[in-house]
Amino acid sequence: MGKRRKEKILIVDDEENIRKSLKMIFEYEGYATLEASSGEEALQLIDETVGLDLILLDIRLPGLDGLELLSELKQRPYSPEVIMISGHGTVQTAVEATKLGAFDFFEKPLHRDRVLLSIRNALSQNRLARECKDLRQKAEKKYQLVGNHTSMKELWEQIKKLAPTNATIFIYGESGTGKELIARAIHTHSLRENDAFIQVNCAAIPEELIESELFGHVKGAFTGATEKKLGKFELADRGTIFLDEIGDMSLKTQAKVLRVLEEGEVQKVGSSRIERVDVRVIAATNKDLKKEIEQGNFREDLYFRLNVVPLTSPALRDKKEDIPMLVEYFCRNFAEDNNFRMKSFTPEALETMKRYPWNGNVRELKNVVERVLIMSEGDKIDKKDLPQELRGESSLYLPEASRVNNLKEYRDLAEKEFILAKLEENDWNISQTAREIDTPRSNLYKKLEQYGIKIKAGVGEVVAPSSSRGDGGEESPNS
Image 1 (cartoon, rainbow, N blue to C red):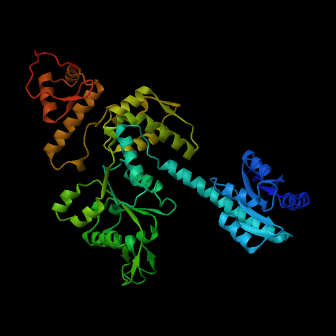
Image 2 (cartoon, one colour):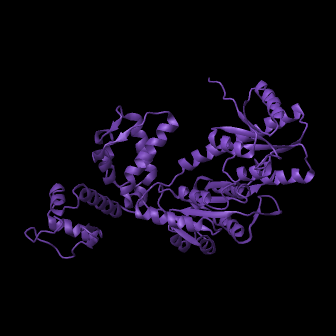
Image 3 (spheres, one colour):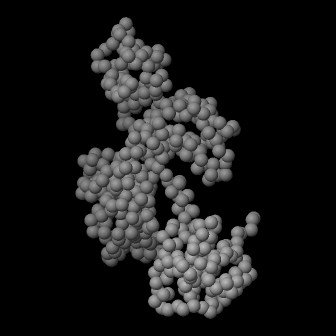
């Protein structure tokens, strides 16, 4: 284990004797020190010094005085802590320095033990601030929205407009498309960014516990409630709460969520006391809530209260141009998090991945990338290194059973996905695709019309012709 670096303290005072005395004390205590005799010299040293941790700053300096220098420093992001010293201190001066952001204020002559104690506290606070900054940067990197597709650019424009407001937002999208990332991006760019972001997966909490999770409970409220518990809404006070899969919430709990949205009030389970909270609500679902309302599973008044600003999280199959960027992003993050050597995917491997339907969306892509990084031997990942289902060597075109209601739907969806994948593989060449899947072109055209598949035609798209085609008919311009 390496030695901990010496923390750096800059002493700014126009009296050389004071600088030398402080330098001797600090270096004896194990700190590295720098000296400046004026505000201008101090600014130059601050700009040139990497990793400066603390500044001991005299108020009366020739030229730029200490309070002016303090004001300048506090306008900079992540500036070092500053302790002010003065030979002619007054209460008013101390108050002004504190308002400007000084950590502490001392009058001369300085008392060694008191100054050292204050320095230790200031450096401790500085370390915590730095660690928080590092953790925040890592978290922001982990939860980054990646993509250059038009749909992603439009989404970012919407986020930038919505984030600074307090509007309730509803995010729609399939499972695995990154609804949580959108919610976090909204929070990060909002005025609440320095307060909590609380995520709740409503589908993962048993119905009998969700009220307690969201609103808390008092001791003895129910069997097992051995102590008081704060709810997620209270924990998110002044921040943002993200209610994922809200379509799975019980009607009773929905009524309480509506009360929070309308009145800003929460009531713990087992308590008669009403508490106020200031929370921004972002909700998400992959269900058709209008259908849920018709079936009596979701409150219409809550739907309208949540659906103030709807956002859509695009499916990966609709933005396949972003796959290379996402793959590189997942590779880099995995390598950094696991001290793993960096690997890259060949163009052939990426093209194969772009032809895959990705029913599990970005989450499925991330899992595949990490699996391949672990299992592959070389630094270059080729098509042969990809899982069988991506290479089309197994049940690639079979839909998830949860997506269909009966055998006919399953069969039709499997056939549609098979045709789409084969068209992609053959660059939408109709004749070549028909030959490869061993069917007449006329039959393929019928299938395109049946499933509403559009034929890519240079610029824009045209719908597949509705009339039957004979094998001897005129060739499609895409063939």
